[in-house]
Structure formats: C-alpha cells, structure tokens
Amino acid sequence: MGKYGEDTKLIYELQDQGGELLALRYDLTVPFARYLAMNKVTNMKRYHVAKVYRRDNPATTRGRYREFYQCDFDIAGQFDPMIPDAECLKIVHEILSDLQLGDFIIKVNDRRILNGVFAVCGVPESKFIPACSTVDKLDKVPWEEVRSEMVGEKGLSPEAADRIGEYVQLHGEHHGLVPLALFWAGDGRCRAHARLWVGWGSGAGGGRYDGLVGMFDPKGRKVPCVGVSIGIERIFSILEQRLEASGEKLRTTETQVLVATPQKHLLPARLKLISELWDAGIKAEMLYKKDPKLLKQLQYCEDTGIPLAAIVGEQELADGVVKLRDVATREQVDIPREKLIDEIRRRLEP
Image 1: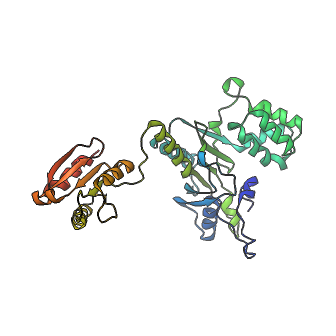
Image 2 (image 1 turned 90 degrees about the vertical axis):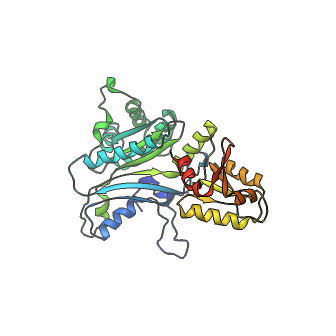
Image 3 (image 1 turned 45 degrees about the vertical axis):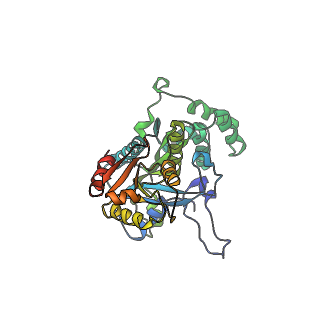
C-alpha cells in the first residue's frame, strides 16, 4: 500500500475475508523489491512472467482486464549511470519490433521536469502526484478534458491548470524545449512507456525505483533498480486483431500433423502411427473418437490450421504407405511408411 500513488485504490484488498491484512498482487515490481530487501540481495538481473490483479474497469476489446499477465525485466544493483536503463529500452524496442505489432513510439521522460512545471505553475507539492496522473491522460483525451479533471476532481485552481496547459501542449525543439529523451535519469523518478498506434494505448512501461527496496529494509539500505513491464494480454489482443484484418486464421495449437483414418475399426492403426510420430518428436494429434468421419477430421485441420494430415486406411495398410495430405492445397500423395518421418520434416522446414 502507498507504493502506487493514486492507483492504490485499484488494489484488491481482502480484509473483508476474515480480517487478515491481505491483498491480491497488483504488480511484480513491489514484490521484487520486497524480495531483495528480505534476502539482502544487492545485485540481480531477472525476468518474471506472472498474473497480477487490478480493481479497474475492464475494456476487453482493447486487452484491458482485471486479471492479466505481466512480463517484467529488472536490473538491480549499483552500476554506472544509464547503462542498465539503455538495456531496458533496447529490450522493449526489440520485443515490440519482433512481434510485428505495427508502428509504436517509446516515450522517455523524467518526473523532475514535470514537477518543475507544476511548481512554476503554482501547484502545491501535495498535488503533484494527482496532477501528474491526470497529465498522463493527454495521450488518450484532449486537453479540455484533462483541464476539467484537474480543476473539478483534483482541486487545482483554474489559473494553475491554464498555466500547465501552456507547457504540456508545446511540442518540439522549435519551442525551446529540450528533448525528453535526454532525461532518462537515475534518481528514481524517471520512466518510459511504449504507446502503440490504432487506439491501443500503452503496451509497456517502466522506469527507475531506486528508493523502493529501502522502504522494506529495516536499515533502509538502498538498492538502485530499473525495469520494464509488458502487458501480455494487450499484445495478444493486438495480434488477434491484426490477424483478423488480414484474413488469416489464429492458430490455437502447435500441432503439425493430424493422424486420420477414412474407415471404421482403425483406431489401433491411428494409435500406432501417432505413437511413431511422437517418438520422432513430431507434434501430432488425433480426434478422440473411435470412428470419426474423414470429412470431420479434415475440417478440424482446416479450422485449427494444422498443415498436414497423415491418413491411414485399409488400402494404405495393405500397401505399406501413408497418404500425406497438404491441408492448404488439398493435394495428397502416398508416402512409404519408412520414409514418412523424413518427408514430414522436409515439408515442415521453414
């Protein structure tokens, strides 16, 4: 509690379930900092993929859920400035590029700059965090809505809000502004997030939390930390939408071959063939029915995107062959049983 600013209200507390001071995990960063402090670890580099929970309004069409997976990468320890930070930015860029999500922009800033803007605009220090959380919404909503929230909900004076608006609506060096990318500094108040195009919002976020470990350490020992976090469900939602837009089918299985039979009473033949494929390391499956119709088996391949079907019927058993079918082209050819494994591997080569 108290580690997430205004977002603390989004934590699922469980005090009403027996009176214990418990809560569902809100993120992976605070537990990591607590682990470092409890075990007196001062140097660690790790990644962690696990579920977290937010008491938030879900937006399932945009990959926003109350229960979801985060993928965190963190570097803890005393190092020369900017080197671990640069690696974190590199990792975000590499992941989002390799996933081929489309255009994205990584924004880097330092909270000290924004705090300085608030100070010269007449915002009391006690309202820095609420004002900052509102300014963060400028990527999603116009300034008029942000100003209204500042004044109506956060208690800023209209004069201070208007002065803030003069700053936050400026863009580019022609206004005499220093590029924010220069201010990924190392004092625990800087952060970065990757914002995706097509109205998807933020896909990753991160920054420094140099003072967090010390909050859990009885002696207050500080361990500098920097890390990034990627929301996996949002990434999946984007990939699914891009697949649908391209007309491609989303594969929900890694199965490479479906073992099929065209006649009844051939379950032992299917079991024998699929066992041979499994022993060869080929990802194969079959329908869990004793006598499925061939058309239904082939339709299953098309629906799930399985590229090959190995068909063994009475004639194939007699001839010592397996009919190998390319599901996409519907072309099929008889392959001698002893050459089937090599032929499947050849066809599956990238």
